[in-house]
Length: 60
Image (cartoon, rainbow, N blue to C red):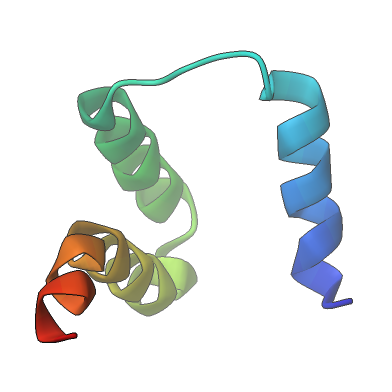
């Protein structure tokens, strides 16, 4: 288990029944980077990965 799994598990246990629009998620990610600029690159990579998930299916 990675250290980050604990945060993911907490997110799932606290908010697992909720849904969130992509627009709200994008705003929260921007807010996080504004408060924590050292995470700009990982957040950019994560957002790009999420945006391109369907592209991987097209390559098969």
